[in-house]
Image (tube, rainbow, N blue to C red; front, side, top):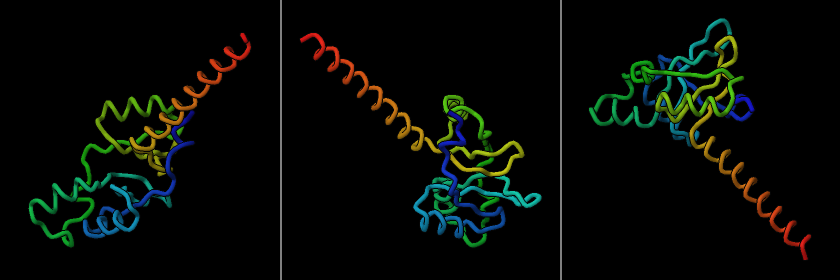
Length: 149
C-alpha cells in the first residue's frame, strides 16, 4: 500500500517567515506536535522544513529567546526529509528509522505537499493489521475445532 493512501492530508503549515510564536499557537489550536514549513512555488506548497514542539523548547524557551522575533525558518529542523506518495509503507518506515524521525511529510512527484505520516499513525495501522491477523488465527482454530467434533 502506498504511503499516500494513509497519510494525513490535513497538515498544519507555516511559512519560513512566520514567528515561532505563531507556530506554537497553531500547534496548540490544532492539537499537533509539529507544523510543516512550506514555501509557495508556482502555486504549489513545497515543504522545506518542520518545526516541532521540541524545537520550540530547545531553541526558544530554554535559551529564553523572544518567540515573536525568531521565525519558523530560523528554528526548523535542518535535516529535513520527505517521501514520495507512491512509496510503500514498509519503505517509509525504513526511511523514518534510518533518519531517526517521527514525522515524515509526503509529497507528489513534483515535490508539492500531499500530507504527513507520523510514527503514531504507523503504529496504529500496524497494530490494527496485527489484530486482524490474530482474529483470523483464532477464527481458523475455532473452525478447525468445530469441524473435528
